[in-house]
Image: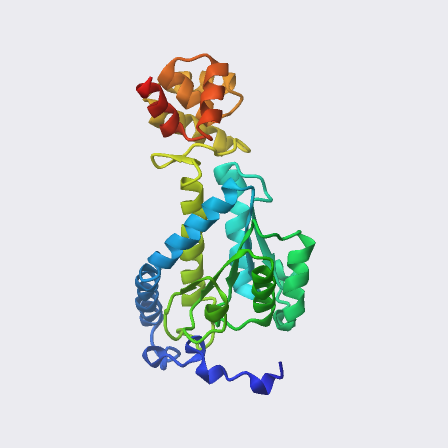
Length: 306
């Protein structure tokens, strides 16, 4: 697309914010207050999209049950936010690194350095999905503040041709991505404090929505008991201690008992919790959790019914 064909003035995310027109003339305190007041609008804009976000969570859980993946794709800030959310899933929820993935226009180089022209390569979006063997079982979430990024649109169109479920996250009601997606999420946060700097309110909205999609999908997949992340991986000293606190919170056991049980269960919180709460042999606990697909609450409820 020729740059003259891009009518930035029609994008809500590119309009000038009347409330910050004089932000370069006010005190530092007032400058930050203006930013904060604008940021307060973000959560309210996201709230309006909860019905659509709910649908995305539900189809993602269905995809996981069928062996599918959650794939985020974006350019620039949007791509980096997707990668950030995906990269946190393995340590937080014990997922395989392939289950939630983030792709960015320009590849790995673009994670740390801007590769601005990469977002204009529409065909590259399709090729990047082909590289990871994207299939009908997967869910694609396209991310772009403007809703018109060619790289993301190319990926979304390819995903649709595969028969996969496709969602989008943008902040522009007129964005083309809204038309392509099965599940369009459009958080209308309004013009940015600095005109066109969509890493600000739009980026914050995207991060909040990504938090909801990944966390909601993991809760619905049995990765959380109460509000405890019971599949957390003990990959460093902090997380080893967190595991002990999780077991203690879930069972009201002592620190030493949590430590000993986690050692017996080789750092598996779920096993440790269910074993303490039921008194079953370790092999019986393993079978029980397997039967209930890893859900602690369902495992405990199934014993009560017997």
